[in-house]
Image (cartoon, rainbow, N blue to C red; front, top):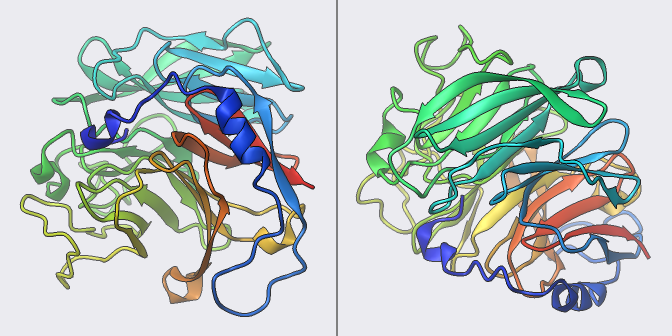
Length: 364
């Protein structure tokens, strides 16, 4: 989750009306800050999809169009079907909500239409961050199965989201658990993205061997990650300390430099530098690639939302050059801030959440 310097910004009392009024004014086709001409822009606008939401920290769409989302503090997984919030929660978990803990990550199995598997990552009151799997039946989670327990030692820097790569493996981001040294130790779960088989076991081809679930080293607190639509490479948001919020392209065995006594603007060549640094910090949260056809000018662009300013930003990346960012723009300028996640729906629209609502970007 978001680092302690940003947690004080959790003004949950911010009204949906104030944010929606500002976002409603954010219309247009947009343009990149530099680079060659784009496809003819499709004018867009932001509309409220679900008002009065309770801290919808992570979202995932089912193939049938239902939106699943986690409520961070209540421990409830909710479903929106045909634009209506279902009365009965999909699942309710007992969660530890101290610090930045709570109901964190959410992912649907790539074969969800056949097996109904839903994966949840949360802070268990018993002292673990826990990865569990449910089987969906009639909109309700059944057959709860614990896959992985991750020891924790700090209320902050939990990371939290989960997702499936093109290799069929389940990836999970975990913050440094409040100790920067964890990020450089491949025997520790904290401070990296982890890679598991869907049943929670460790793949034999993990970069540090089957004894370690670590996919990489040197992350501080990556809130979210996404996969490049062509190569499958991981792109992750990263919360820095008082400097250097980042976008990273994360590869197997890579080391991204977070460690004790990290210097702002770190240029140490033994570590892999970020694709983008943000100073002043923005508290980057959700990140996603757009692969739809509704907005041709957005095709294969990387989208990032942030907590501090409430902005939706778009980046063009050159995957052939290890993800070099070639163009960028602010798509939504923000209202009261506090944006949490962004995903693409089966309808080709983009959906993003704040602490109090879910919005979508649609054609004008």
